[in-house]
Image 1: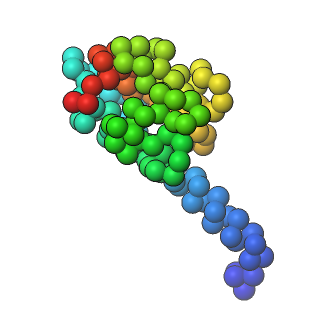
Image 2 (image 1 turned 180 degrees about the horizontal axis):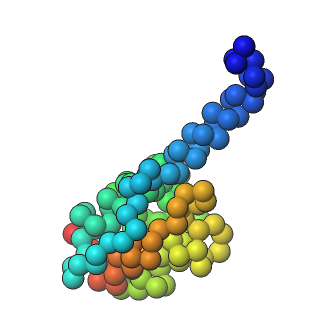
Length: 133
């Protein structure tokens, strides 16, 4: 009897909504505070944050791809580079994470906004030259 509670189309809609929300969630892997070390490493500090929070939408289906350092540095066909080495505050990716760039902030709602410490870590890595280290 419970199977007939919602019409089939409503079940599909709810399933799609659930999958979208789950795909944009970090399921608690988004720590609130990150200690900023002296030298920020792309491999050890930046890429793991992208993998845990951004990969569902930016894993390779067009737009900005965050799968590798090379993909990140290519930017997007619409916006060009999203990283300006030595200029964290001026880099589009930082503005998107902060929600100060035109369009939606990243990650998009309903995903949790990144903490200031995570954004500061990305900004510091960029300010240090955005090296592939």
